[in-house]
Structure formats: structure tokens, C-alpha cells
Picture (tube, rainbow, N blue to C red):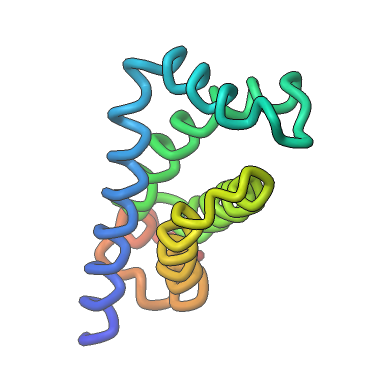
Length: 133
């Protein structure tokens, strides 16, 4: 029972963080994208790759963060968020934004916990659907 409660606490914490990141960025999606593109203007990434990714970030954060909060396809959602976070870490290395990497690594560790201990995901929509991730 204790591990199921711990899993719920971690799942809600990391899910709300990712969901909140996306939620506040969606209404200002174009401004968010423009700001990110400016940050990467002097990096080795070409703009034609940067622009679509910057538009996708808040959508992925919002959608898969919500799925984590609900416990819906939890393992899959956590893997998608892991891929996003790893991409963000790589991007930050390209522009030498070392401070942001710490936060991303912390998020990644919690998301990895969700993947590794998904067997403890009891208080979730997945459980109601009889789905075992």
C-alpha cells in the first residue's frame, strides 16, 4: 500500500508540473515559440527544425502531463515525456544553458521512476480500465 501511495504522490507531482508548463504556454504559443527560436538562433540547429519543435513542446507537456495526472496510459505518457525531456537537455547543451539542465534532469528522474515502478500505479484511470501498463 505504501508504494502505491508513493507512486500516486510522484505521479501527481510530476504530472502537474508538466501539465502546468504546457497550460501556461498554450495561450501564448507563438510568443513562446518566437522566444525559443531566438534562444537557438546561434546554435547549430537550423530554424526549420527548431520552429516545429518549439510549437510541439507545450502541446506535449500539456497533453502527456494531463495523462500522467489522470493515470491514463501512464507508462506510454511517461516514455513520451522522457523523450521530450532528453531532447530539451540536448537542446540546452547546444546553447550552453546549463542552469536549465538541472531542472530537466530532476523532471527526468521522476518520470523514469514512473516508468520503472508502473506496477504501483493503482489510483489511476489505467486501473479502472483494467489496463496494466
